[in-house]
Structures are given as structure tokens and as C-alpha cells.
Image (cartoon, rainbow, N blue to C red; front, side, top):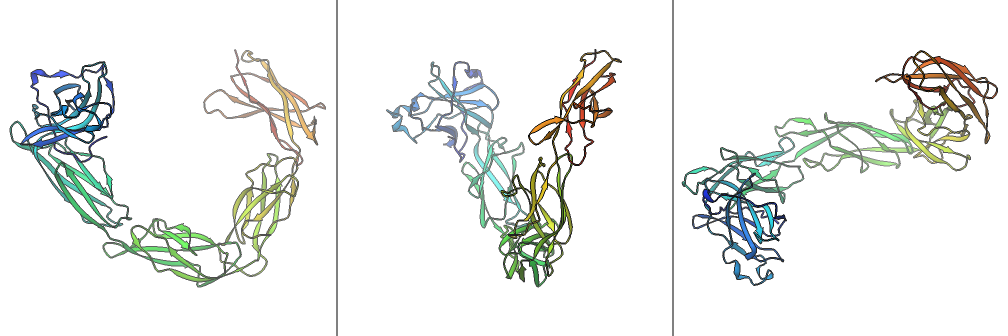
Length: 530
């Protein structure tokens, strides 16, 4: 547990001649619930300790003072009146002072708390608090603005902190002291005072704030700055759709326009990142230049409203209304489907209407459906089709030997293409090898294997087919190169001899297929020459 509100720094009285190194090997590190900070009383610096432990008494606690980043102990002292609590429970939340602290120079030091010092059960809580060794600190702070807006989102508080040197009473910058700050009920990371006694704290606002207050402080010194949010008015201009529009039911109708804002200087500027709603549903956001382009589903007849969402830095714009009429007129036409030798299924065709018209750029969401029996369907992909334009789309799912495919309009029930029964016979390269392994450079090896084709549920030799032999050298960035071809015999076997010149990987591929068969590739076989 740590003290959030810094009270005045303390220092422990020890002369430089008694400087010692903090014991470490025998002491166990801990994190105490109790905490300590510095406080000023009667013109002297002390350590003030607040007790929260349940397993120890204040009389068990010793305070050590170190220079930050050093293990050398500058002062060690106990707690006054620590024997006043007979049990740990009696001491809960009770505060104890140390004697005044005297250190060689003004500055900020680390406070360690030690429980049962010098015993086998010694516990050390390093950096439990800070000792601000300076008297009568004075904080001065100013804010560069009291109003934030979309154009100016950051308020910067600049200030200085000075204090008297406890030894000389000279007023100097309180270098290294930690300035505390808070806004929006959040404590910010501590800010350290520089060598000149200055600090600068930026506070960035999100626009969701109403009236907010920034607070900065050091011990009893504080400064507070009220900040208000100035919201800029928005203006919405819609180019598309016009005053009325007719569209296929379930289609996505384009909406385009621009949103601007009245800037702090009174000029009209683009408003980027503003959400645009159609019929109360978000459809898109404005780009940096204030323009927007999206689409909304044509589902209900009647008045439809275009508006902007709630935005943190702005006041809402006046909405735009238009009349929407929908009709169940969507249809697929000129659809073709095919599967290639690499099992890639491709559809082409057009999405249009049986009658009437639609706005330019109207789109529909189309599902690619797959079935193994022609009755039970599942969607394996989807794409956006523009009404009136030819589409060409590849399924993310590869084809199999024989299955069923169709297209379906996702938002217009019953709008489907005809069913396509697609598929080719599988081929497979088996028993592929490159032999012998480990041969010498310049000698010959044989690439061989067997090409099979699937017929129903059985595999048969695939005779009279070309198999290509590829090689990739074992060098960085090397590409596959075709070295030659072989033709399969009646039993599907093939072989081809090559002269070896370097290490690399070999592979056989059947890619010269007819429309009834899929292509196939063999294993990648590494070969090292001696």
C-alpha cells in the first residue's frame, strides 16, 4: 500500500561518518501494507509512518533512508511512541513520527521499512516511500488553456517547485521531487521536477467529458484548473440516394455524402471519423476529407433517415430523409460454374432484376453453397455482387470428386442459381523416389514413381499420362525448375534419368490433365551429393 497524497519529505539523522551499507543477503524482500512518507513539523523534516500490519508491531519497525539508486544507508531510526500499542490490531491506521532527519544535502531520498532488523526473520520493504528533504516547498502552476475542442485536445500545466535547503535555508529548485496530478477521477503517473525546478504535465481530453477539473499538487501545495469542452456543430450533406429510390428487396443500396464541422476559427472543415447511420443503423464512417460511402439494406418501405452518430467532440447534424420502395425482383442470370484441375471452383454470372430498376452501385450479398448429396446445403463462402455487373468468384473451399454447388442471395429468400454437379477424378503419385542417394557429382540418378487414378472407391493405374520432374537447388532464393518429363506405362509406373550437378530437392508432378481429372504432386525429396 502506498501513500497517494504526498506529504512533506523526511530525512533521518546520521552523520556522514556513520554511513553504512544496507544488509541484504540475510534479509528477505517483502511488500508491506504499511507505508511511510515525509512530513514537516516545527521547521524540521521527519518520517511519518502509518501502521497496517497484522503480524508485527510498530516497535518491530525501523526506518532506513537511502539515496535513490544506491544501497548505502544514510540514516536509520525508530518510531517514537511505538511501544504504545500492545497488539497489532490496536495500532491499525495509527501514525508514528520519527525524530527529525538531517542529511548532507537537499533532495529526494528512498525510504525502506525494516521489520525485526538484525534478526533471522528480518524483512525489508525497499522503496516503500519517498523522503522529500526540503523545507516549506512552494508550487506555482499555470494551465495554457481552459477550453478543449476537436482542434485543441490537450491542456498543458506548467509549473515550478522550490524549497528551502534544511541545512542552509537557501531557496532552491526542488530537483527530483514528484508532482502528483489527477483528472477525470484518475491519478496520472508522477512527474519529476527537473534541475531548474520546472515541470510540465499534458492532459489529453477525449471529448466525452463535460466540465472537468485538473488538479496538481505537492504535499500541501496544490493548484486546480477547471476545463470545459467546446463542441463543434456538424453539417450533413447527402449526394446519394436522392429524394426517393426503388431497390430490390434485400439489396444493399449505396449512400454517399459528406460531413463537415464548424472549426474553432469559424470556418467549415471536413469532419473525419464521424459515424453515419441509415435507418438508425451504423453503415460507415467519414474519411479524413469528411466524405463517406457505404450501403444500407433495402428491407422496409417508407421514409428512411440518414444521420450521424453521437460523437464526443460535436453536436449532431440535421438528418436527411428520403422515400424507399422495395420490390422482390432479384434474380441470377448467365451463371456458369466449373472446377479446374487444381480443384478450384469458380462461378461467373450476373445479379439483376426481373423488372424495374435500381440505383447505380446497388449490391447484394451472395453465398456460395456446397452439398454432398444435393439436398443438405452449407455456405462455404460469400461475396458482394454489383447489380447489373458480371461477377467472377472462386470458392474458398476446393472441389471434391463429385458434389453439388449453387449461388444464393443471402438477403432475398428463394433467390438461387441452378444447381451444378461438379467434380473430377483424383490422381495420386505413389512410390515416388530419387535414387540412389548420396551419389557423386556428375553421375546419374533415376526419378521414378507410379501414377494412380481413383475410379469410384478403388484406385487404378493411370497409363499414358505425362509426369513432369522438377528440381530446386539448395541455395537461398532458388526456384523450382522443370528438368524433364516421363510418360506412365500400362501399370502407371514412370522413370527418368538425370545427371546430378548440385544438392537440392526433387519433385514429380502430374499437371497435364484432361478435364475429367485433378492434378497431383509427389513428395519433395531432398538429395545430397558427395
